Image 1 (cartoon, rainbow, N blue to C red):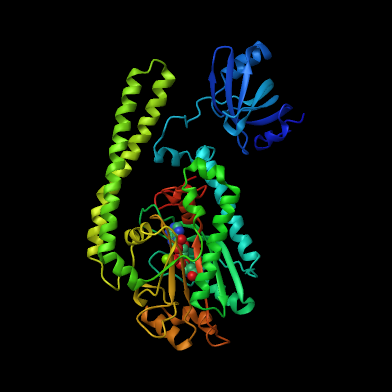
Image 2 (cartoon, rainbow, N blue to C red):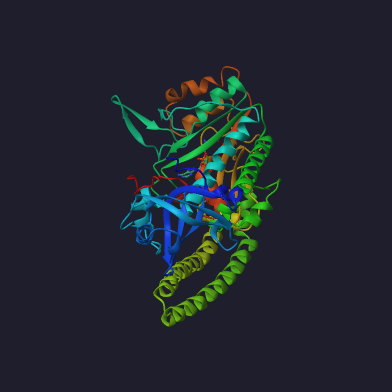
Length: 502
Ligand code: 4AD
Ligand code: MG
């Protein structure tokens, strides 16, 4: 038997014809002599109408009692219906059930994050996760496309290593036949070897950091893509980063509009993102953070948050009223679900209001020389509608390999790219120290053992050249593009300090 003749996202090409689709029951509703089944098949969602008069009594009864997430295939005629999800529906004439699912744990009612994480293996089927993973697919394809069409060669760098790239405080150690090795925090040091062979190279893979902080921006295992280029300047590197990020946005806007809509992402703002991005030095960023502009911005933000809170509270009152007046159970359920949602929106607004003056205090106490923390990045990033480069950080807060600035040895030739609208850092990059003596000095200053870096130091002895690169975090980029608050949703099986199962 041929079960799989059509995909839901191709129904437009079959209007009026009979098709068979195979998938899972997302939800169903009975209207007496007619059933409405919403089926998802991986390509989309489709409402299927079962009229009692059109099928056998046995089948009608079987379909009527099917549980959520039952798997089945149905045959029927396609017809256009603007109101229907996806724009087409199917009038069912035949059906075959593969698995009649009972008691699917994730009901349409809202659930807490912990419950959903504990059921990640099933939650992946939810509409939001489905859309997020589709966006992720495009982002990753766009990343590879960009480098493959811009003369880069892929170099796969190792995951087991003995060289820390990004500091020793967040290394995962593993026992390697009695020796201690660690999981890679970055492919960069190896990639630099590749750049001196090919000129333009990139690596792309999972990256490991023992992050003990539970923030919305940190995973312990995340995917990072890193290009590295020989004979390049800091300005050229930033232009490369700009073109790269624009190409990702373009691909997502071309391929995932319906996913972005479903996820509630700010599509209009994404469309407006063009080069050049904003450029600030670290010192200018500090001036902004400690100056009246940030204070004023935070004040305005506070006023707007307060007014949103008032709106949300009015809406809550309205919904509570609707719920108590509702006659039908499904109306009560619908209102209850909306109440849970609005309550969580209210909690989020309150949290932001509470944190706002904290930002102001933090900003007032900021001093030149400190690294920008998550909340500093948030402020700078909130104040801009396009990504912002922050360049030339104090040497002491940055990695040992970053090149000192020629005219100001206190800062390095580096940049972070902050995504706009409060998302914060998505890229970190720099020129690399290319002088043997200076690099050795930095290694000693940091208290590392030069022996561990002998091969890396060799690159500065044999044909050293000005070179640099950067790394983009895939999950943070997806969170920004989709408006998802926490990056744990932006990878199918997230790894966090307190999450390793499933
Ligand atoms: O700024 P980072 O630490 O830079 C590097 O690792 C350099 N070696 C890259 C290079 O120059 N080749 O990390 C780069 C990016 C960050 O901007 C962020 O997007 C992401 O990686 N990132 C994380 N994403 C999720 N969870 C974490 N714990 C992350 N740490 C960094
Ligand atoms: Mg960084």
